[in-house]
Length: 368
Image 1 (cartoon, rainbow, N blue to C red):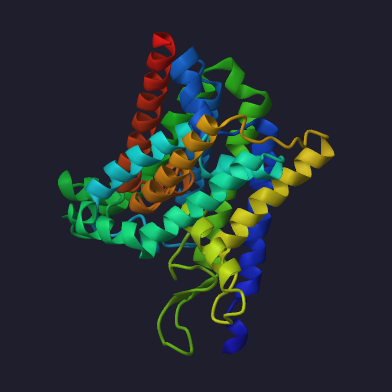
Image 2 (cartoon, one colour):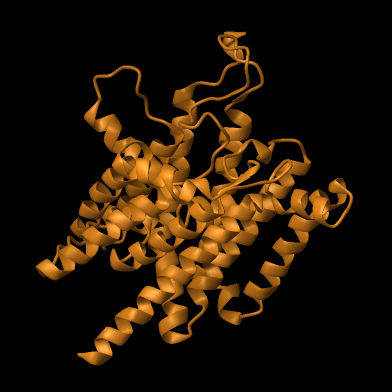
């Protein structure tokens, strides 16, 4: 029976490979969610936003295929539980959106830039990870649990849109589960591909590949790593994940756990998980692309003001990402692929927070 249990090392190596692919393609195509919002807000340019939306559409479609074919059960993820923590999603999303604007990029972009030689992003990574850990288990965590985490609406079964709509509208649950994800994915694809620039070049490559990587992440943790009855606990288990639940790509908590692993390396109870391996893989993949294209460049802070801005942004991303249960990758792609209502709220909050901070920056610039 033990032979049927997948190796945690296998799950981690698969996570590293997916992260490396993401880092390589992300560096090549300049995949950046903060940049996508910035392009729309400041220039009215939608190419990178269409890339992000294309990745979301592909992820929704891929997860839908895995779900209806019985390969995975997405309701075993952290996103689709019955507790809709709307306060945490809104506050955490706004904080993350503001933070990623101050820190010149979200969590995934931070790792991609580290691979490209950006020393500023290395500082952001350390501070973000520490802040995330403090929000998971430290002083920020106490504040989180006693404030926004108490703003909860409990739904009957699951907070994914097909389940919610079947209950609210009295529709057949099987029908909504079968057709709603497909309809939403197709609608997104039509919107994205309506623009000529989205049908070629980096927009198409980045959106397709990133979306498929998110789908592959679900397959690795929810299918390859799933054990229906672990011989030691006699309960279902998801091997190699820190949450012991189905996961795909998400970075804020894994950044915290990466620092924890490095600090407690001699503690044999701690291991490289799927999330940690994914984060390390993104850096490695981005580094590989930078070396192959000779685009590796070291960059540091030009002055103290820039350092302070990035430090504040890193703290806000760490606190916001944990509070919202994910970042632009964790909630804005992996979470949205499950059609969880909480992920939709977080996605909107991140975009609003980032756009508001960009408008404030522009207003300050005009006053100078």
